[in-house]
Amino acid sequence: MESVKHESDSFFADLKVGVVIPAAGSGQRMGGRSKQFLQLAGLPVLKHVLNMFKNRSWVIDIVVSLPQAQYEEPPEWLSEEPEVRTVLGGASRRDSVWSAIQTFSDDLDLILVQDGARPLTPQKTILDCVNLAANGFGAVAGVRVVDTLKKTDNADRVLGTQEREDLWRAQTPQVFPYTVLLDAYQKAIQNNLDASDDSIIVEKVGGQVRMVESSPLNFKVTVPADLDFAEAVLNYYRSRTG
Image (cartoon, rainbow, N blue to C red):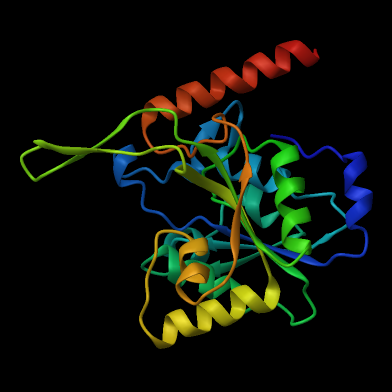
């Protein structure tokens, strides 16, 4: 999605935010194709993600973690992004994010982490997460669980039904005060703690994290059907805006 300056951006004029985009996944569920480099409505998925954070005065650094092949020989379109730096991603999401965090200057206020394959994040979600993190909390975009959740054994026999009233599906962006995320990652590396997202690492070291209501359309492109759906969504919005 294209970056459009929002009137609320002015409220963050004094903030310094570093953006991390982990994009080093192998795309196993896409048949071995790295989903972040696939075409979506005429642009690579990762390009849509980058566009969300360009032309924002409060974003002072953008770092993308890449697979080895793309790090050694970046796509031409990525090489032409003057606002973007790249680092070599790691074997896990934790390692890829840590590789990026270590390159930031220490004068940042916040670090924002956004999946490299989540191209439809609403601007309001981004701004709401930044606002919450600027007040000292970890902020995680997400949506409340609405489906009934079943717990099963290895044979898929139902063992019980989970209460869903207080459950959320976590998304990105996930935004944290710089020192909070840096400290959490340092402890995670020292103690060999791994996690599927950044908020878990912060939670494990005692950090305060709050959820921010987002949209079901803020999904991660994971399987081929997701790419088709994302294209349909983008085409719909483009038709409405002319």
